[in-house]
Length: 146
Image (cartoon, rainbow, N blue to C red):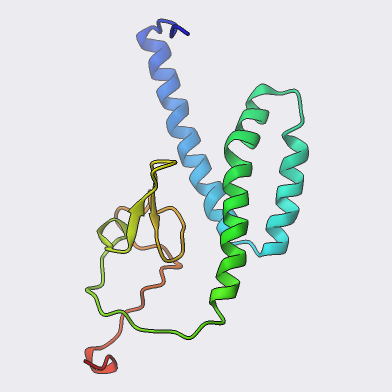
C-alpha cells in the first residue's frame, strides 16, 4: 500500500501527537507497574470492554498497545511474587548512575525497547536516573565479602 504524501505542516502535527502519545503512555505504564495483581486484573477487564467500542483510535490503542503491555506486566507481577520467596545473593558491580548505563539492561528484539533484565520493566525513560524500583542497592565495601 502506498503511503500518502504529507505536507510539512501535517508531518509537524503528527510528530507533535506522537511525542504526546509517548509521554502519556509512559505515564500509563508507570501507573500500571505500581498496581497489585488484583488491581491489574480489574484494569484488564475494564480495558477489554473498552476495546470493544466502535472508536477506531480507542480500539487500536487498547487492543494493540495497552492490553498486550498490561498482560505482560500482570505476568511479570505474578513471577515477581514467586521470586520474592527465593533466597537472595549479592552481585558485585559498579553502581550505575542511570538505567542506560546499567550492565543488566537489554534491548527487546520484539518491541525494540530497552528493559531491565532483573525486573523486566522498560528503561526507555530512564536515561538520566535509575528507576525508583531498581533492584540494585548501594552497599559499603565492608558489607560485601570478597
